[in-house]
Length: 364
Image (tube, rainbow, N blue to C red):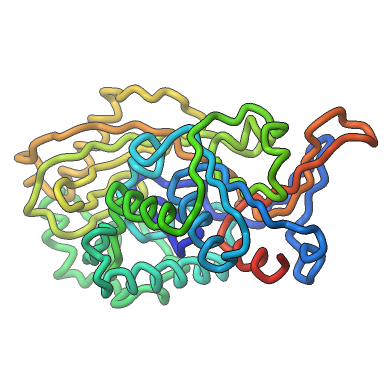
């Protein structure tokens, strides 16, 4: 699921770390607190910002910084670019799910901002280049299920009637407890990331491809925006980060024009040239090789929704590790980078999600 304002993203098909309450974990030799709501950042002289990570989050934050704070020098550092990032494997569907402890008001605030951003892109001359389209989405449930907290964010949300459920039940040879439909937006990640990267370059952001192994390598920056995904577990010693293994299959099925979900197990997401079939969400699993049991799970679930997929031509498989976390980390931190005693240096770090750019703009 996707949430892109251009500062926060939930990747449909392959989700980024799930939304949650504000992070509050404490780590040895580290001072952590939420970004202040009044002007204490104004006095710290930040004019040279490093954004770590070139997935959709890092690119979005780097661009927003340049657009809204043009006097700040922005450098984006990453070891992987577009085609090698987790973002690139995602289908890019707007639909928040697996929300864990996220308060409903945050889901709806972030979700509405993202939907508006994508909708504006869809009605602009950039829609084709950015890979934006709208589709009808259908969610089927085997068991009774409460309505999603975000139902008022999207257009045309409603429950499916008995007559509307019948074709799905006939196709799958089963009964569904309920279903709903709504209009959503797909932000296809390969074209979107390339479009976004071009805008980042044109905005004057400096790009560096290298691997950061220690915070000491970043001491030349006055502030670091952490958009490093799973890399944060090692670099920032974040014990709450964990991998979530995602496996999808892309097929040629040009007759598929709508999105379908079966419980939280399987999904069908159309793209420009392919259709994404999924999926898995295996917490703590670091195996990036496709597995036969996952293939069977994906095909059986998707065929139960749309039997015509039996005629689809497989194009490729993709397995990636999504960065997972119980809660979103929205924090300002002064991370110790040497020694650990009173003389230790520290590095100002923002663990960056949706509201950080706004807060930085207010206080820089």
